[in-house]
Length: 231
Length: 231
DNA sequence: GTTTCATGGTGATATTTATCAATTAATAGG
DNA sequence: CCTATTAATTGATAAATATCACCATGAAAC
Image (cartoon, rainbow over all chains, first blue to last red; front, top):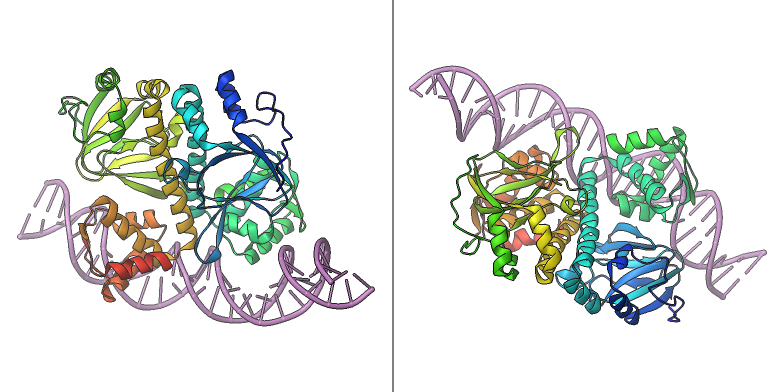
């Protein structure tokens, strides 16, 4: 991890969190003065579950995975962290501990922003606070929906959902690099890696997707959506 | 549902949300002027998933269940709603729809507070906004933890966890009325009702709890905690 | 280029959990 | 008090999913 500043300022940054537009010039300056950049290589841990929430994290370029480390070394992948999104677990406002670990998947350029400063601005800027509330609420809604889906859908539905997540949210394309291993896809959908392999093959055999070890192509989106819904 | 006001004002209410102490006298008055009370009988729906988030809900007395209505009429019970807690799904700040349904379990006396007023106060009172952020973050953290537990623990662990939730959070007592049916306990722990019955019996046979159809008594808490952790 | 190690993949089997069918207890109305 | 319903319970069975053992492949390390 290197610490050379590559982004000149928050004001001109094109990858910044959209809620920053609600800050005054002074507040944005304050943020800018209390940030530091870092770059990470694939596999490196950017933020560790349980450590103090001293910073809010943003990704300027690249992708990372966020995951909770559960019992017996079993991980649970929450999401793919993308540029422009606030990465800050709910623990920040509860026990001041990181709720999850963040690890780089590709090369990542990241910005850390001092959380005390961040929190201070939230207290005085109502519009910014509301933006944060929206952001946290959105994530909370996603995780509630996900919890219900994990509970009520069977493996086919859960895996189909994950494939659509990569297509719709991460890559915005029907064809993409599968940046997660089969093991990790399992950690995201609560399946054993062998089951991931088998169901990917089934989906390929029935012409819904093309899949090799590193690439996914959605061939019959309607059918995949059906599978994700009917579960 | 009747609509007689039984509580004279928010200012003197002993069951009010603790975050209301951060309001000014004027703001608290505003809240008080924009609330209405209602009482519900057991089983009645107090708030319906998908309906507009026109109000934040508080319970003055009694208990309710909050649940998400999933596919094929399968419900997923999120929590037992208790006096003094804010009941407002994340949808309020996302799509202005109720994220879950709330149904009375016992007789319930409730307060509905106009959400526009509520939101307006959040914008101008930073301390109140921070309190709301803490509240939402707490719920979000609970649901993340729950999602991981549902994924990684087996039935015994999940049921033990639910029994401890009733003991530690809902009743604060090792002996309590089981206000949920076996079916509902299943909707909370993602188990079929038959499995709930069987595992309750196993726990009773091994001396960890006493259980009849309406009562639970924790006999060996340490063992139950072990099961909830290892399970 | 060979070795090493992680990942992908496959079949057989074990475990977990749900479903089905039937019976018994509990409860609400009349 | 009696009857109609709903919930609780039980055993048998089926379905879903995980685990195990193993081999193939491919990329990184030497």
